[in-house]
Length: 190
Ligand code: ADP
Image 1 (tube, rainbow, N blue to C red):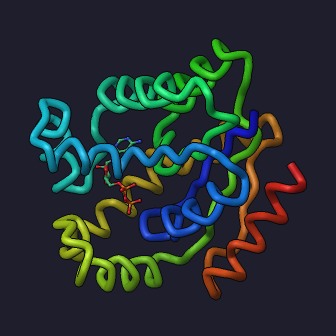
Image 2 (image 1 turned 135 degrees about the horizontal axis):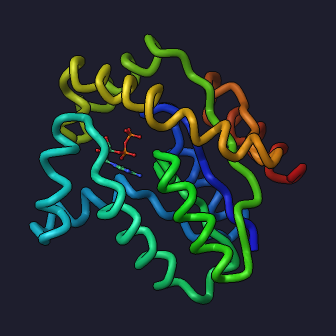
């Protein structure tokens, strides 16, 4: 199996790039943000739990997120691999993911971080907010809060996988096609 973590701050282009990667590598894409938005749109108990955290730019509690992720992975026994997008965002999430994959006799092949600086991210997310309909994309204070959460709670996940030589990073600026080529070169070298 090839199991990739697409990593990087909010607005760094993970979702955009994942769309191309799943076609090329035949992997199942799991975006925890998309899953939460789907649950919210259907007013499920899970969606209602996540709503207030997302609106404030905070992380949904680990036990909620990990349970949802596990269900989604287990729903794809046929998968030849996964692209995790927006997960893991904390060290306990990374530990849970490793445990889940170990139980399937597999593991993370690599983590690839898209590097984009803070002002570019704020610009991109505000632009996305004009059409995304996402309330967390419309308010600069919430966007900056998400970036702080990324720095404080999520960036340690890069070091967690770096300890076993699995973390890589590439520039996340330039054309979508150029970034895609950089990603593929990194994946092909894993
Ligand atoms: P972005 O990468 O632009 O921040 P996402 O769609 O990945 O967008 O996430 C949106 C929100 O969903 C986050 O701010 C957070 O509240 C919640 N969320 C998504 N993934 C996770 C996760 N792994 N753990 C906790 N909360 C999450």
